[in-house]
Figure 1 (cartoon, one colour):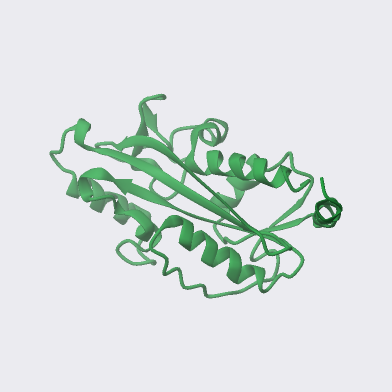
Figure 2 (cartoon, rainbow, N blue to C red):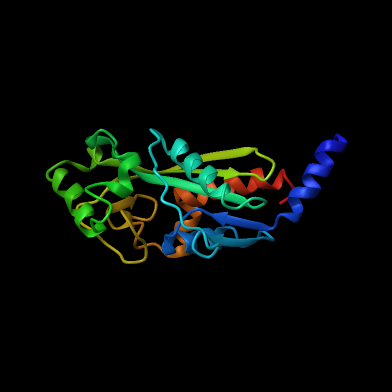
Length: 213
């Protein structure tokens, strides 16, 4: 290892603060659970005192994650800033709502309404054509200017009706054959083991470990 990289790792190791660019309480619970074994201070944007109106105009999950990470990084010099962009792709609906999952039918529209709208559009469609997946891309803006990106998915299908109250967003209508239920019916431990965000976070942890985090 060169002297430069030895110093770089030493400098980054001192940077124990990671700011995750989200205000979603449910998402932060998942993140903290999965990242618990890292010796870092993990903060949400609100906890870090950062208020930004970020325009997510990327065409892919990766682009949107990078947009958020870089925007927040400018407000938090010296910190590692992580951001994710995730969403639901329904094959029968041409992979809608996709990158517009959070803004589907309007940002202020409740997920109860959004979920029912998807169920209505799939009324009468057989299970084999209701295939869907959750996608999560995570970007990390490092203090030295490097950017790390991971992307993971969980495959499943859209059920006939909402079920469960343990998740959030589209969880009540997204079913996985492995457990025979919706992701909103899984325990947090079960969900974190198989979820798109859990997989992407664990992949990101491996990348962070390369920097001595």
